Length: 109
Image 1 (cartoon, one colour):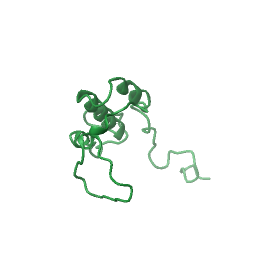
Image 2 (cartoon, rainbow, N blue to C red; image 1 turned 30 degrees about the horizontal axis):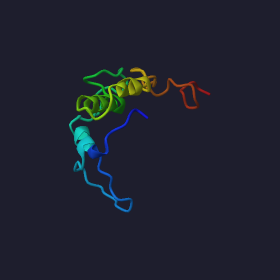
Image 3 (tube, rainbow, N blue to C red; image 1 turned 60 degrees about the vertical axis):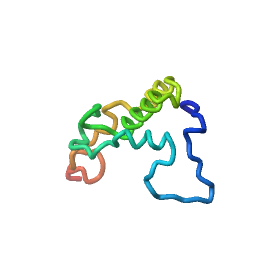
Image 4 (cartoon, rainbow, N blue to C red; image 1 turned 90 degrees about the horizontal axis):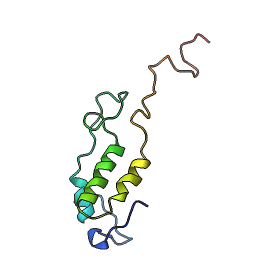
């Protein structure tokens, strides 16, 4: 858990209701829409940064900061979420085809 939020900021749909629209129904959904999602990376092998190569984790940090700025959750949530993030170079260890260690790695087996 990263914190508590007052129920006035949440829309709680009835359990038997299914919705597929993208219209914000409450304050926290509206706040989420105000944080731009990451675009497709031009170089997914490059380390993550705050401007040109973002993951969903960076979006989540921006969203949590937005919720804190709006006073919806306590600032301690930022440190909690930050502590669970992968490092900026996580997932970029892919190798070009033929350079891996598995079968079909181009080693003439």
